[in-house]
Length: 146
Image (cartoon, rainbow, N blue to C red; front, side, top):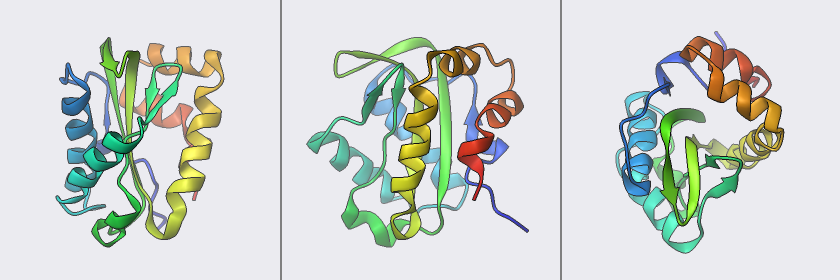
């Protein structure tokens, strides 16, 4: 059985966070619940954010752990939380917080695939307009391929 990076249970179409830190916690909690990371991985997501913003442009932030957090990663996975109202992410509007856990540096490839999707404003609009979590997973099919 192939384990997809992005599983339906890790997609939230209406996130509840209203701040950057709550959004990081929300994306991280999905990765913990999925069994992809241990709880302490969320702390490393905050450490990463403190050293460099994970805002990527086009409403996207990709919070992820530091290199020191490798031991907290059980398997590679993604979580996506979409927000109806933009969250202030260091002065930038974010509508998608994408949590990433990468085993053996797989996060680098995942990051580049996500950045490619979000560099296309048409794709971003389709993700904003997606009615269901299933629609979001389908739109991110290329990112989801192992």
